[in-house]
Image 1: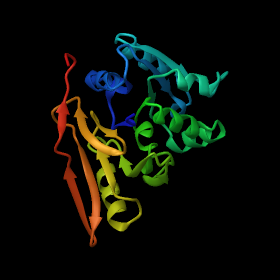
Image 2: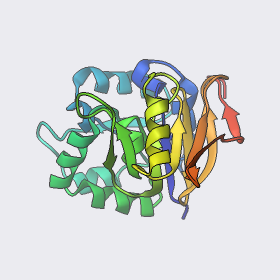
Image 3: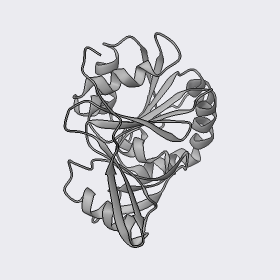
Amino acid sequence: MSQQIIAVGGGGFSTESEPGIDEYILRQAAVDQPKIGFIGTASGDAARYILRFYTRFSALDCDPSHLDLFRRTPSISDWVNDQDVIFVGGGNTKSMLAVWETWDMQDHLRSALGKGVVLAGISAGAICWFDSGVTDSIAGDLTAMKCLGFLKGSCCPHYSLEADRKPTYRRMVKDGAIESGYAIDDGACIHFVDGIAHRVVSGTDAATAYSVSSKGGELIEKAISDVEVLSVAQ
């Protein structure tokens, strides 16, 4: 059974844009009307964010639900195992991973991945799957942080939107402060299958993703060529 992870750089229902990306994520499930669960830990289970999730996915052919970790929490194992797709929202990655550790969330999600549940997420919910990621969880300059390690390498979201993302990630990779990895524009995502970048999916013509590495002290950045641009009709 294939293990699928979809890392979104920004956009989608979080910003009420790029509906094609959300529809693409649903289509990767093994069933016609998938159950999709939202985990909003990184935003402190913000009610407005959860509402955006339901507003988008209630209009699509799926069965949405969400997991609360800051209110009365159901059996996490039962909830996770009941999903076909799990989507992790953006926010404070460092705080999210700290809360997850107390709930053994990493084990639940890794088990779900092995059973064919599609794991997806945006921003904090994108970098969390990698060995490491670029985060603004701490006030001040962007920093590198260790993540779950479901995917090899590092990840930087919001590559085209936030002015300090591109120079910071490039410098970190070149200096060896973070592993080589992937940079993802807002409005684009990378679909990984069995740990390998399968394709880039974009909600706009302008958005894409890049592989970023360093060799002999030289930075190597390449746009990923296999890009599928989506529209609402698709």
